[in-house]
Amino acid sequence: MKTENHDRIPESECFEADGHVTDVVVTCLADGETAIIPPAATAHVDACDACTARLGIEALFSVGASTALLASATSESRPPLPIVAPAPIRAVASMVPSSRKRRPLPLGAIAAALCVAVVGALPGLMGTLRNLRVVLPDYIHALPIWGHAIEAVLRGMMASRSGAVLRWITAAVFIGLGTLLARAMTRKRLLEGDVR
Amino acid sequence: MLQSAMPTSGPGGRVTALVPSHVLSQEVAALRPVVRAVIACVLGEAKSHPDVEDGTHETLRRALEGTSRLREGEALRPWLLGIARHVALDTRRTRKRDRRFVGDTLDDQGETDAAVDRLIDPAPSPDERAASTQRARQISTAMQGLSEQQREAMILFHVEGQDYKQIAQLLGVPMGTVATWLSRGRRALADALGDTVKQ
Image (spheres, one colour):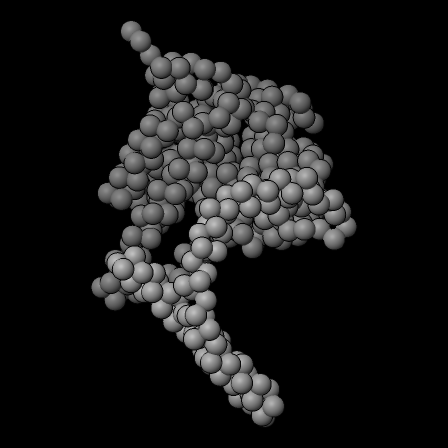
């Protein structure tokens, strides 16, 4: 094969019979090899809409090929990435207790925390005990309401199961109302006591 | 005179060193004809069309303002042509919106647009990324279909970033032959990947 390593493409290879430049010129220009193209060929492409369009297509082919081959080369040379969960998922997953590895309970820390809680709650507990004499009658007054609620629950359990959920909800509402009523009365009584 | 240092392209078009900004500006300006050709091709207009001119200016402006984003080792040319592609695509979308607005639609415009979209945006879509194994197989098959020297020329130019003169010397062929091999190789690759364009 004849080896030709001139600095430029021979002009005879640059133009077709119809006056437009050859594909070789278009390819060279698309690849940025302007230095090896005779100025006349470059000037033609610059002035000709048809050859400019060919140049655009060839340039896009060139970029597309580079992208595809580089991506392919990169993926071949690089080992497949391990499947790693995104950081937020890993963070959440670390909070979920695993059945395979169970850490021993920090009993010392829990005991210390309970002691601190008891010491912190002591003033409140003492106050409650002091007020128990005032509070207790109100809770006793609320007992019938609790009784009705429990009765409703029991009836619901004994009745058909169709309305069981509704009855449970009703009972819960009754219990809640009873508790609120008892607390409100207690507060009122305490306030009246203060006034007195 | 104080000048900022910017990356510039060396042999094979790869950015190799930090040089004054005016050198890179010259290199970007030298690529103007190709940028204009890409935009004209994507828009399907003559190079003298105002949209093509506007797109070319916009591309060069973005490139000169964003040269700091060009990483060392990254080729200037594909980067710049990528910007040109995006600018042209933006113009096409604006045109499409305007066409829809006035109700003036072309029968085969949708198909042509899709074909050009595939070619002008070779970056894999999310679906394609999921099917990257298949894509790699297609590329491999297309490359196997080329002659050994063609394949070598493709790798030397597109992967290793060698220029025509170096490839011609390595393979012992004229530079025109290198150009022909590259052109045919790219078309074979584009065919295998389903990338088409209106001719």
